[in-house]
Amino acid sequence: MPVFADATSAMIGDDSVPSLLIITVFGSPSEAVLRAYFAWSNKVVAAWRIKGMRYVALLDATDGQRPAARVRSVVSELVDEIRTRNPDVEVATVLVTESALVRGALTAIGWLSRSSWRPQPVRTCADGLRLAKQILIDVGIEPPTLDPDSYRRPERPRS
Image (cartoon, rainbow, N blue to C red):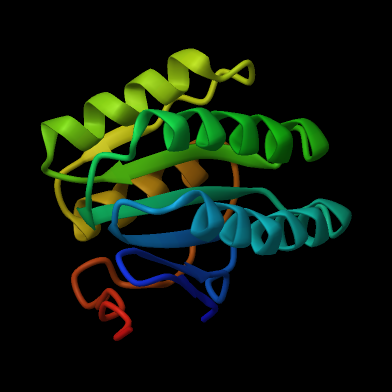
């Protein structure tokens, strides 16, 4: 799993589960960390588009913090870019967080987004995985066999 990190934040991308892109966030990602993550995810999603695959993104912000205003704007731009380059590949985004501040920030990013990005919030990774699997079933995509209750999120990288 690729790790994108600096001294105060990190993002880990996991594309190992078919039809599921798991993004784990630690801290408040800097613009550099976000751009590095999105450069990688753009390649992953483009490859899936070529193969005719669709996916649900599971954004695990359990240990994430509210991004700064400038970073929220960058996220909106990068989300729009990936969705414009790869239309109809992402089925939905499921957001895992208990933080009202993070939920609010991501709601604001959705408002800024021209691509109608609207994350669906849940409180735990297990709930997020269950929802992701149900979304895939609802659109006729075979869900991954990953067991929501046995999933273990990655550890925060050491700097």
